[in-house]
Length: 179
Length: 163
Image (tube, chains in turn yellow, orange):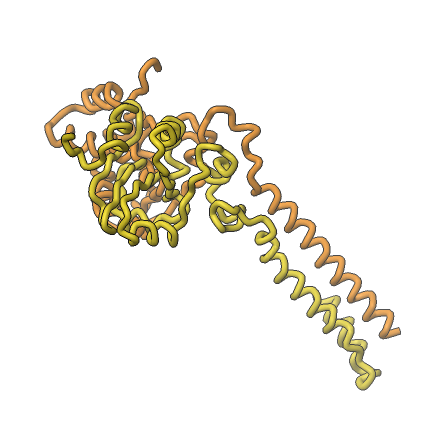
């Protein structure tokens, strides 16, 4: 560093007026290039999450191409969907949650078989929605109607949670009405 | 003479910039996905976990502001049950992950430092099984069950069939 400063000092004295602007130009180019580095990540944006892939949790990145995780819903759409008042299920999961990763591949085929569209909300990417929708035990399958949550089933499919049949029954009859 | 020096200086700066860009891209690629290869069947549940240090057990980590009251209440009970939690198995997959947890305790508290400060993990906050096990532990401890009894009860309830 002192070397470069020395270089500039030596040069400055004899030829004050003819000082070249090239170093300034170079410096500007460098700053612009360094700035551009930050935006490089926007070349690789995940379509599912509408975020640069490098900003996603590693566990989420692992699921980007998984066929069981293609119904991802983002915060804006989620609120719109619930706020519309139309009945809807929402599967709240976290890509980092082992119980969710065991449950999703069993649950999604059941929903498909029943002809139910099941949007998947990844809490690992939007953590503040844990509080917003009062999610405690992931995964949570919730049922909304009239803009309100009406029922939920907490914990996944497996030991300590529920059976696949309980999930199926919830999807068929979330309010537990006797038919 | 000065011209030449300017060009030299500029050249050096450009080379530095070029080097930075190349190295920047390189590290970016390292972080990129494609992780699928080496992970086998193990779900990487612990890799994205975030740690936060607070002065002690009475100061809960700020990340809990994102979570439901019930989650916060459960976290608040972790420190008081550390002696039990550190002997319990966690069945969320974290004990077999690349960077495995030693016990259920690690899902919530990563470390307690000598000065009393606590390194919290946000892993448990997003983990249904971790929180369910914690909830059961607190209930059983309140009933006066021993650490061994709690461990057996947790294993019986959460251990996957056939393991």
